[in-house]
Image 1 (cartoon, rainbow, N blue to C red):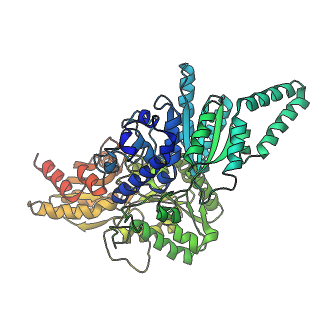
Image 2: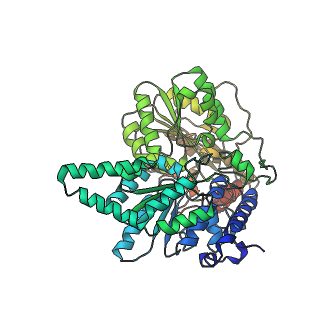
Image 3: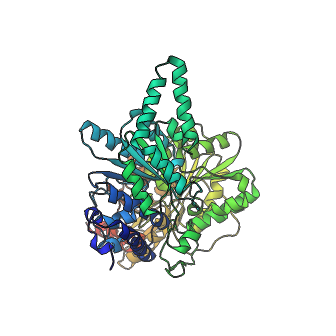
Length: 618
């Protein structure tokens, strides 16, 4: 008899006998594997965290006790145990549940996440709010080891150590092996160091030593450091946390035993838990990087399904960068913990001394690149558009203000599909366009991308190159790379009834839309604007001479985006024009397949044509 179907909430979980929990964990893994093989998603991390999540809901009184996940891609078991079994098959699909915790989705999702290194800050805020309201609930932050490569996590840790509020931080260290310290010794030390009489003895000893002025204070500090030597958590101890572990996070009985003890410890506590990424699914255990985030795959073999032979934008960037770096040894590449996702893994393998993975630290990546550029090198920082938001100040202050030639390759610009609102790159044009000295380009296709990358390195200026996720438009790829004129677009088709000014991956849909309009006896031209900044105003003027009707088309929010740039230019020159701006409204875009989202947002060829028809005939 299966255990999982009987659990409608954590209250049901807490009624289950402990001996049935290993079976429950196996069932959770199987459901996760089967579902993600069909829908795609973050598999490895969620498989590794099954026992941690099960133990947390078993020991703590959720939702009164609050669990805050970092990033959230490890939380699939959490969704299954908190009343969403029936909906789990819809995860990451249009109208279905999200792949990340969402406050509006469940009272058990205490904080919405998607970007890393935020959980400790949020959990500390909840703990302080609890204290002020004189409540007795517990607050737990579950963070991965990758989260601790981000500076925000350390800002929160030092603040938590200073405030001394009750807070449990669980460090899920999902390395490829189980540490030798995990097991009997780690378990014994943790049990010993959480025992009340040990805590009381330590407190009394420390207070006694502090009576003796400077000598006593120094002795107390020395005693604390001596305790830390027994454990690998000296840094956390110095920040004011009680460090415990490491503990085998894939042993459900050990996790429950430790958590039942730790929940009584006062003040900030960091529990170090070691898990195996991809636990319970051999292909994911053997290739944890591949199965961190996956598309649909065959469960039996682990092989990917539904792959297109079309060159992706990411691959086009990667191949072009290799060509350019082979010709210019000054080119260096930087990523923030995403070598495979950004295509820099091939650069890493070919030019290891010029490759830098700075961890989840986008702010540092930007200013580190500024330092390289200031000393004569040519750095490219490859980020997802959504994560570029995190280094806005560094782009503005450390790079653009000093006019340093740093290239930003922003992958996943526009809508990214099933990862949803935390990952859509639909804000970059708006928040970057205001920055002086910054050149912003968006290629129409994968071939134009490679030429714009050369343009970026040749520009000797701060340069943003933004491009979408996934397959390109299957265009012919030129063998030789050449620089394009900065701030210059091109006519693709002229039409007497109006002109579509398109940017980025909406250029090809604009051409399709023009064909559909021709079937309705409307003759619309199309311009590939190519650059958002500087804007090709001569092309806009030439379009106005043909017809005052202009349509701007972008996969960015309309507020402050490409269409706004065109509108500002036309208004400032007091032109006679009629403008229709097509883009994303003042909203956060939910998750679905990219094609579904473009249709819903009226940004695919059919919807673009409909919008122009409706506008034309008003």
